[in-house]
Length: 436
Image (cartoon, rainbow, N blue to C red; front, top):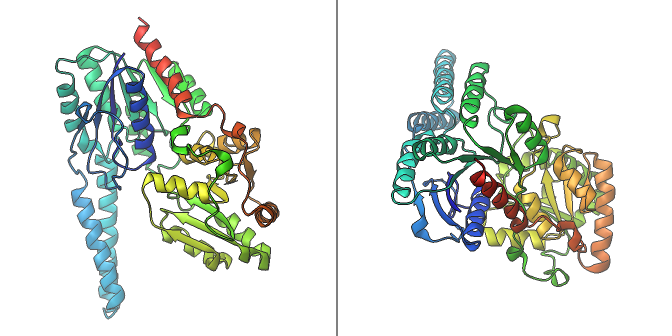
């Protein structure tokens, strides 16, 4: 099979989307398939991932920054706000006029973004992605085009090259598009997104998404074949035998979290309240956030009175992040406690399971991660501080008795490796290629 992959995120940039697409491309190459990749560049994230596929088969297309002006406005507003804090000597009337101008600029900036970032802020990548796709396919005709989003600009590029070559294309929705509850937009913009999504995805021959609730949703919406492909974990990232798990990084019980969070939606407050409930016992625990914005953590910890039990560390390369997870006693996963979160399952959850560390899930208690966790006896899920505190006592007792919380049984991650998941995706693509 010859497959053209179009994705904004791809190694070496270190994001969960790039990890998924990079490992899938490597899987296809190792299985003997002929691939080409069109990816973005200038991502603004650390570029620490290994490529895993021949460099000559990857075209990095440079985007146009369509938000250069609003970015400039935002920087000016920040400098203005800082200056006002340092020199608060303006007359009341002047301060009022200044605040009015700032409000107007913010509203104009917001309107510009909503009106031009369609379908997303990477729309300036589309001309370069189209051109790179055409160059990639000179003398080489793929059997299928596979595009992954977000950003969903990749879908517009895939539709363009698919129509130009007369080959089928598949859209992978790692997250929702018009139906994403995290995307707060005016009503008119939601109508535009819904129209563009239907216009684009109706031209695919099949869809891929990451959980069964989302797959069922898109089957009803588009009446097309939809494959559920979990993010999974790569066994090669966890080659050390489970019985030889590295020692815990701390004499205290360490609860680790890797990555960023969505303020106001994915909230560690129930855990912080549980730590406060533990009283002096809580002094024997530490919660360590790795690669998280401190402003999203420390104020909540201070509000709960447990700031001294919480640490935030800078982002690290992917391999170091996996080692951080393995050395934690318990791993924290936060979900939005809202029915609209149903079907969301972050990629880090499968890395957690791959590390065979117990998982503490906060948020939607009947969501996909919580359901998998209960089915596999892989940890604990609750939003009630007293119940969380009781579970922390059990883990702490185990830590004191054995030196660390024991690893999960290997069955907890059985069937969730990336190779198994990618084999399902490979079969789905081949079936599309063979179908009339």
